[in-house]
Length: 171
Image 1 (cartoon, helix red, strand yellow):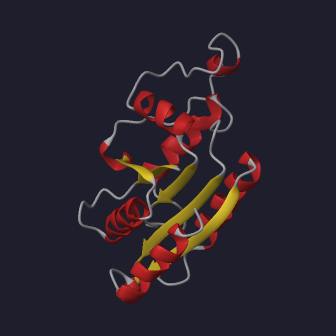
Image 2 (cartoon, helix red, strand yellow):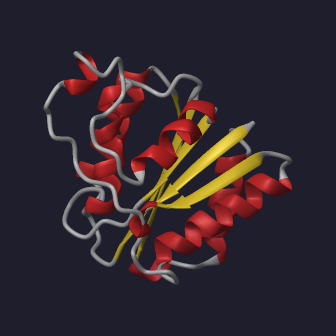
């Protein structure tokens, strides 16, 4: 399967980046083709709600930024993994822009499965991110393969690593 991991932590050695790397390793070990993109290092603006994509653009966004690199990857992906830290009650801003820019294509053509991996230093802050993720799965009519959350004392542990391996087995 073609797996696309969107990793949105601006911290190169952060907990979410570690989870994304572990997911990539586990998926490659299982024989999948994996692309990991650090969207936090990309210049991706938010949706302008200009409707160009749905009028003159024939599904193409008027904005020409680093999102242009992601559109073909999203079109080829069969599994999409969102790896985003929670800084303030939902997926971080670095993940919001690419998600909202998918508005122009409505949903990725080949994505059949999704997963969410997220971390936070604060316990009990996952509800907003989980709700958003589930809404995306429902709207795109894709299978929810699972959600991994890692609070402060769980981060970068063998237990989380095993949860990632178990998640990848569902792809």
